[in-house]
Length: 101
Image (cartoon, rainbow, N blue to C red; front, side, top):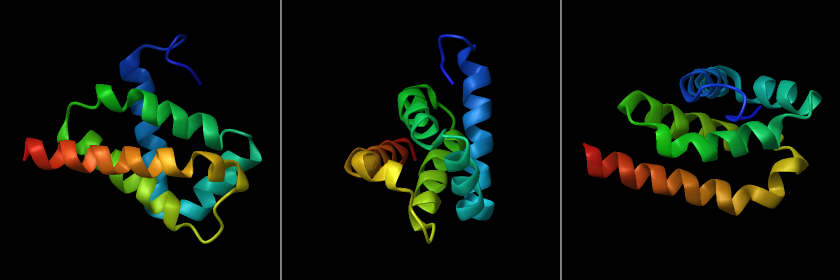
């Protein structure tokens, strides 16, 4: 994945799909991403694109999707090195969301 190869709106849509699937079944989504070696790259892409999330629903997807991922019963080892960064990005987005409401 990379915004270099896809327009931002396409990447935002694809990331939104993964964030939605985290809401519906975080463990299955994480297992799928992990099986294909995409977990860290998808999360990093979400974080990289968060500044482009202008709509309320995009910001909520970001918060809910990543929060649900962290609630998955078996958090992949690949996410543990970026856990602090992940949490701080969720908190930053919550602050932005509260400022916009």
